[in-house]
Length: 154
Image 1 (cartoon, helix red, strand yellow):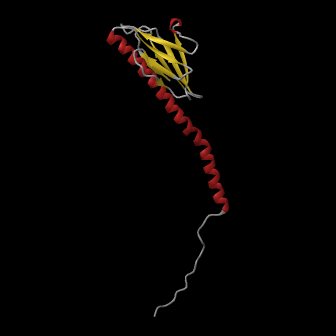
Image 2 (cartoon, one colour; image 1 turned 180 degrees about the horizontal axis):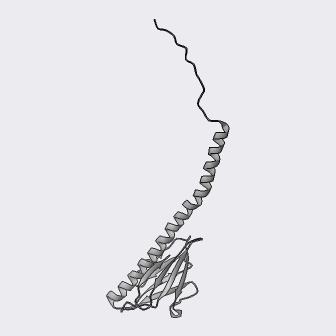
Image 3 (spheres, one colour; image 1 turned 90 degrees about the vertical axis):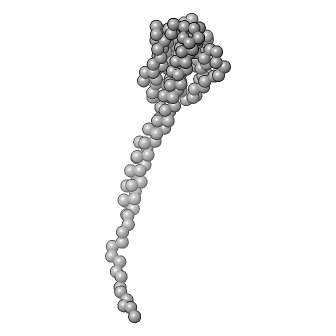
């Protein structure tokens, strides 16, 4: 019938213990370097979204003031991490991980934790700045007092 063949196994393929340890060490170093970047990326995204949300609220307050020909204010509660537009019953919340600082006219300070930025029917405002920060990044939302223009600065 058939012939039998002798199969010879030569050198077996595989990894040595040292090779495996080197790969594990390299992977551990890569994880140690990459994990802070990933975690700060999430807070960076959250921070930028907070700055954009504030800027959108300020722009809406300005456009309402011009369209309805009446003063409109955006009130910021620094400790409560929230803001509200005059004439709007909704409260807009910002993440607790984001620190907020408000710089506004002395006349617009409500108390130590709250203040407002007011827009006038001609488009001007009391001016000011809202700063949102995390541990290593910050965005300034600037309001020009003369034109009421809102801009985000990194």
